[in-house]
Image (cartoon, rainbow, N blue to C red; front, side):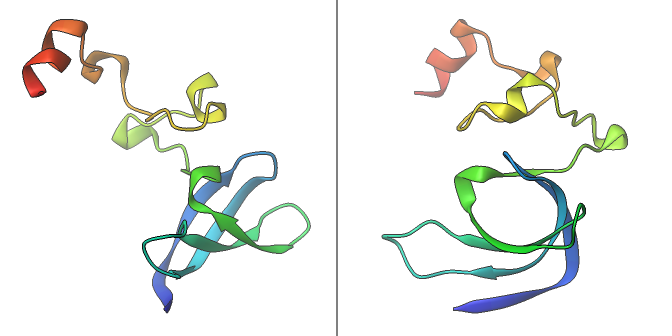
Length: 92
């Protein structure tokens, strides 16, 4: 399924840089989502697998692109919201 995003999302593609995601391709449960992204530098358009896409930095949402953005699989969140070991055990 191809879904056009009616408001493009500012994203950061690991290894490629900043861009705007303007569509999503979903091939089903056995595949990653593909974000159709126009890169800011050079204007290239890439279909980027979901693990390689991060939301863009947003100061007002306390979302920064620090070293965590370059580590696949790690969620970017303010340090004060990261669960400690005791809290993560309670969620299980």
